[in-house]
Amino acid sequence: MLYRLKKSGYQAHLVGGGVRDLLLGREPKDFDVATDATPEQIKAAFGNARIIGRRFRLVHVRFGREVIEVATFRSMQFQQEKQSDEGMILRDNEFGSIEEDAMRRDFTVNALYYNIADFSVVDYSNGMEDLECGLLRLLGDPETRYREDPVRMLRAARFAAKLGFNIEAATEEPIARLAHLLGDVPSARLYEEVLKLFVSGYAVSAFEKLRHYNLFAQLFPQTEEALAHEEHEFPLVLVRKGLENTDRRLAQDKPVTPAFLFAVLLWEPLRRIARELEEADGLPFYQALQQAGDVVVARQVQQVAIPRRFSTPMREIWTLQARFHNTKGKRPHRLLAHPRFRAAYDFLLLRAESGEADPELAAWWTRFQEQQGLDPKGGGKAAEGSKRRRRRRPRKRPAQ
Ligand code: ATP
Ligand code: MG
Image (cartoon, rainbow, N blue to C red; front, side, top):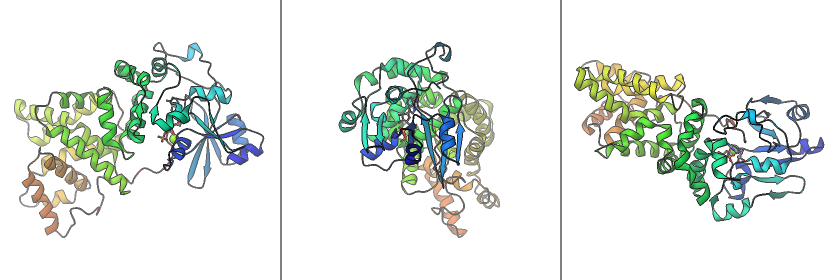
């Protein structure tokens, strides 16, 4: 791939997380290529290429099942009309030199280029040194860089969690102060970032970092509120255990679904509203859960979008919690046949383990499944929902 570009007379470099992770001896998730060829020239050099993106145009080149993202070097020039009042970059398509491209990247450790012409690592910003010290340092003035793109605050927390790096002091200082700027980021983009934070195998650590930097409250204000005011331990325990489960499943290459993840993250605010509806309006638990679900989801999607294919099963996981209380007659058999039974049962176990639900009830359902010849632990039909693990498709945010 790189050689094809080179043969066509262009510069070609590997860049970004792929280079960083290789140098750290970790398995890279994917590779990005930076070149001085324009998107049209890249497309001309490869038959199997597609130009994508509006905010930043790049080319996807397909190699069998892999897709490699190829981007043209971008320039430093900001054009006034392309920035919002807060200094946020709205479009970013000026081509430039490799030096300029390096300065537009986020962290020094993400701005290392592997040059295939002579197999050297090109480092314009002491990224190698930071890599060795385990430091995340933003290029340029941190506050300006966060204002350009507030998602860089989430990226700081994410890489700190993923790599176990520290955030360098000047890069760290503005975060809590500027966290509110995430309110200006489109909810669909935040959804993508939330997935990267919580379904990449280091969710527990990402959660701690996000809370520490006041970023979690920007993503899940209702949850933060419920956790902060909580007189009991169990809501926090539930979230932690839920995230631990997710990390463990990913480590074992088992499927995880965003539906279950969001069900965990939003359960406590939902439970509180449902309890109020039960007590004040005398609603049955099932209806209370349903109505509380409407409220919690409507508020949540103002921050972080949740696609319907996940919010629908998420709500089923919630409402089925009420049906677990029916253990008489035919009803348990009907519940067992529900397509979301598995995920809802796993959720009940999580509630029981964290001390919120009755462990006896959870044990009853475990025994009931065994009596029916089912394996309560088995990933029988669809463990934790129905979605296979997301394909390894580069679904990422291009660089600034
Ligand atoms: P991951 O391991 O999650 O893939 P990554 O560093 O490769 O980490 P990507 O989102 O794939 O992250 O981005 C690739 C590269 O593009 C980054 O390494 C960085 O150089 C640049 N980049 C991505 N997002 C931004 C941003 N918001 N601002 C500046 N540069 C960015
Ligand atoms: Mg990457």
